Amino acid sequence: MDLIYQRSEVNVIDASGHDSNSGLPGVLTGSRSPNQPFVSIAHYDMLCAIGRPQYWIDNSPWSTRGWTYQEGFLSWRRLIFTSQQGYLECQGMHCIEALNSPPPARLSQLRTISKLKRRRAMSLKRIFVYSKRTLSHDADIINDMLGLIRFTERLPYPLRHLRGLPFMEIP
Image (cartoon, rainbow, N blue to C red; front, side):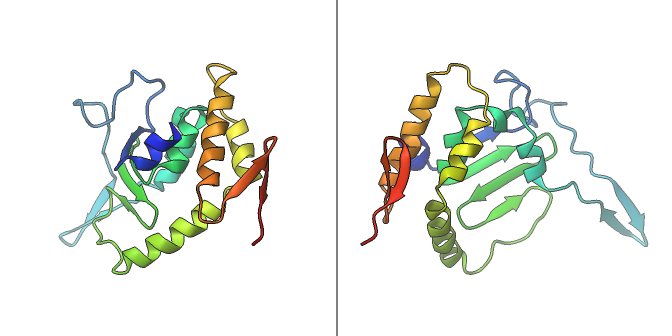
């Protein structure tokens, strides 16, 4: 699965439902409540902030499942649906549905810096975060960890593993 997530154009993530049968919020009428509080002052509508999408993503069932870890970490682009709003995230930027603002002008530079920074950050911390996930089958941990190990070995400065312990070769 690691190669599928890395090579896909975009991965669609449902960070709102309680299980895999919930469906994407906003697709069916009544499946999302986009009510954003506002107040009108002198012919201007002032909207209240919905809140950071990361809160809803981190507290969703999606973020607790073992098989979704690679999907979130290895995907180049993630189109995430929460019960409040849609959210597009990639290596160098993010856009939220509630704000209509253009992406930064130097997106390619941001993407390159972010990409290198993100890929070099693969460490024991990632394994610790993964270990908190809920697994349907205990054997899933082997395939998931092998996918992450294969990913780190393909980096420009590979992170090698010896019996599951990561190390870097210094040139």
